[in-house]
Image 1: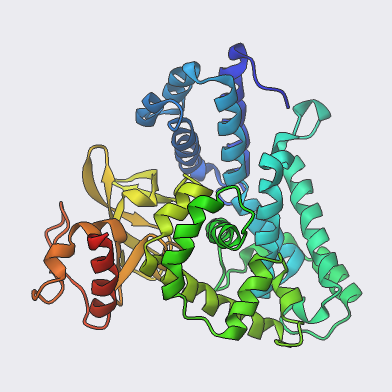
Image 2 (image 1 turned 90 degrees about the horizontal axis):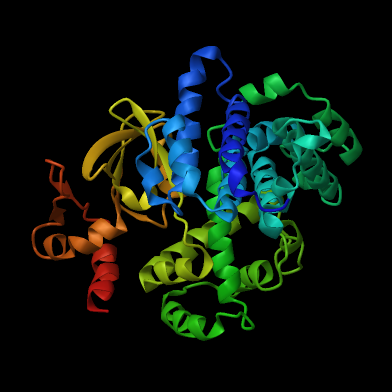
Length: 422
């Protein structure tokens, strides 16, 4: 698509808002959910547009946002458009993955990652290619695009029948016919406890990009990467088998399915994924211990992940860098404290603590079994909890005293001592 003219900016943002509303109906379909959809549409647009026009950040309604966004450059309107629409597709991707791939959480996770990766390729080419002049709505268009990508994924699994669904021994052709004919309503109603959201996978992909960049000696940023590699080296404690696994994935761009069939591994699908997740946890710990996460983010992406937080009855989208701590508060929600409107406030995130803390592990550190605290906060308060006070520290705006459990204190002291001295 060509860049939008200045006269069409307002129309373009209205069209994005309309498309986002339609996408959000995948999850919030009832008329009673209209207010929730409007809040999410406003937060999506405000979050992206304010990166180029800061005055948009304080818009309280969509009409207010549209009037403030008149000064947005046409090329920035286009970027806001396809980034918002990409994030808005999360629920649709998850729904169709359940329908096409079946109940195996590992297969579904890989399918969602596959689709997310393809949608982002070539600067979101598939999303940018949509044209309303072809007669279909954006949701119908993306439904077809995502369906085709998932069918490509399922066909690829025919080469590896053991990967396909829940360990079943059925023939690939039978499996393909069965999942394609599944009823979408029953599929969408199924929620597995270990299911990863599309947002989780986007952030996992960022870690993948960091690792691929580190292992690429021909990278354009190689001069900047060499000192980062040296800082990381003493913190990597991988076995020779784990190193081969990482090298195959990130240097030779092999899939987990291909790596697991190498003679040195010969693993089942479940064994391969357990092995993979364990290595990724180790690598993230090494990145944090070496203090290179911020340096790598500046080379790979400047955009921190965001979460939807309910503060004072209002749903807002906040970058994780504005959240001070996360605490388990219930079966399906997590309490937090965040920077908001020039002050700090408590809020609730509608996601389990286990899943959320795992997803945002690159930004937070565990201090006890129910609390993770921002690395930024821990670094700023290092002088308080690193001494003989027993790991106690305060967070501005919070009355309680935080205490780092003994099992986590030695590792945190070591890691943040290196940061404070560098």
